[in-house]
Length: 395
Image (cartoon, rainbow, N blue to C red):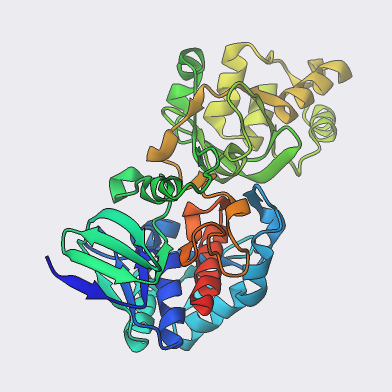
């Protein structure tokens, strides 16, 4: 087998790895990126429905979960969402802000991948695909990475292999296992930004309501998110559910406030006065998806009657029902459907400025493999760009 010498080895050709390779290349380093996949940036390509939600202008440390909530501030201070947007604009990629600070390509996520590949090429970073890493060791000051294509040797190694989410795209625990090999702590790992599944009892109740979407505020403990929820054939999903899933622990209930902008009590009293003969289920069907409104009546959770027959006490109970709707998830869809992995290489083990291991000089960890997990909506891409940039600048 051949032996290849380089200055920097980047393990993983996702967003963080490519950004790191670009920046290290700009500093004149000879960079080699290794990845077992047949093409780069698979997560980039599927994100945002194929349009890549490439950053969020609201990215700040309070929108991330980590053992150290300040850890990401250093990287964000050096590479902001506006820095990545400037790169996108430099390539004349048309984009738009969808909502809540989320930035999307007008056309295709492939444009972001092509941009990163072009930047790698311009800065001399070599990308080797279909390269399976068999073993990583450190001999003296040099890292030796044995692969099916030969052994690569370098004084700097950057682990950018992502987390466990979406294994069908090739996601593995490689980065976490490598950290443990070098006695670097890895925090508990769980699927995050993931749909919930229902118990058998709840499945019987909700299964044929699949596809129904409702504007809601979803809370678990002290955390809450406002966006849509979506009933699925296995449970409940939608942006608000994905967001709260990162904060949910097995056994906990989630509380759903449907139509958060609506003053339920005032609205129902108004309808009682204006249309006293109209049935409650008709009023509810005007507010909520019709199938859901009718099912609530069928379940017997709420009694259907003309509006004139509703007492203030009953209206209050209806308001409580829709503003404190409880669901106790049976579990989640797991890494199969999770957008990211919560947890990772402990931030206590890494230098916040360089992402370098405090125990193993020359070994860096960036992107999703690190214990930094953002909200839904471009936040995790921003961590990939910023951590890759910060690391690349230090090499």
